[in-house]
Image (tube, rainbow, N blue to C red; front, side, top):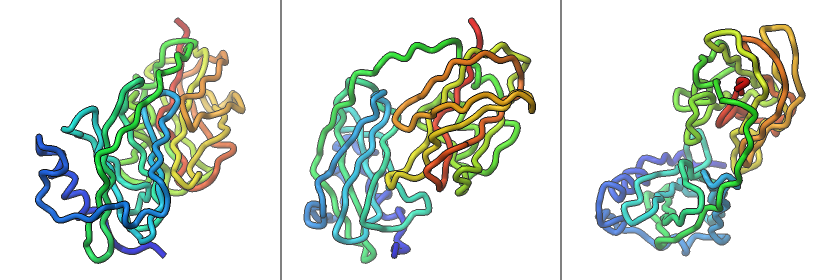
Length: 268
């Protein structure tokens, strides 16, 4: 059972650390070594694109965990644990977003238990891979459009607009729609399209992944099925003309399905 501990205490310490030029040691809070409560090694798995990474670790007691990370001792970025409702637990998988390919990052893992004890790791490092170039069939025009309809949104922080904002550090999440997830994007004008791209959101427990999707053009023509990417953007080439494009999940791993990015490619 998950404890009602929230992230507030641990985030307060992490924010104080990020605000200090002296790094995490500047936060005037007594902390314990996180190694004392680890049940597994800390593993950081970068996305093949080099723009994100997932940290996985198990703890012997429930903790609300977060990670500060950055290219130097200033850190500057925070990734909270992979429980969208908050709370302490023993299996952790925060996702570190906004990374640059072929770059070494420093990070500190920290957690808070039900008694208010704080645990922290040493400063650790990982390196993102060199990005693999993707040959896009056309210009991504999805950011010029707007979301006309959506099956649901988990919260304002996971709004549908995040799926077409061109920002890999944000994402759209449904409120548990699973295979019923859908989002409709309306472009400014009717457009000759040569392909679609979709990078699914995912959670550390393997849920929330859109595996297969299809696209309905102007409420009539159905295209697909297409494969989505959970570890990176999956691109499918197709020819169509339309203004409104509805993306429907066909096969998913269930849960709060959604997308980091949805791209619509216009003919050059």
